[in-house]
Length: 71
Image 1 (cartoon, rainbow, N blue to C red):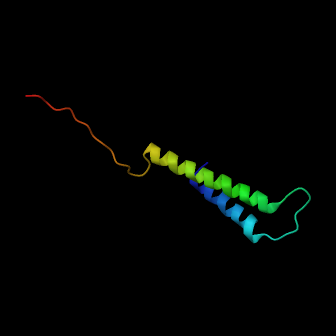
Image 2: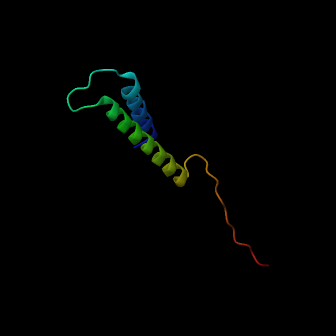
Image 3: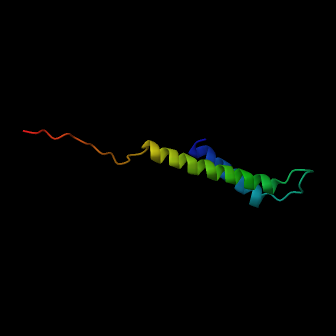
């Protein structure tokens, strides 16, 4: 799951949790679905950021090691 999908899940979850006010159909609570989507989106966002930082991503510091020549 990428960063874009994670942010999308967070947004949809927030809309379902705080902006939608309807009578719940039998067996389905939209607020709970919204919270679950926000948790999944937040977890996906954190995992994506950890993956990109460990991979190198955008200009992470690089170390160059050179052997010394003994004269």
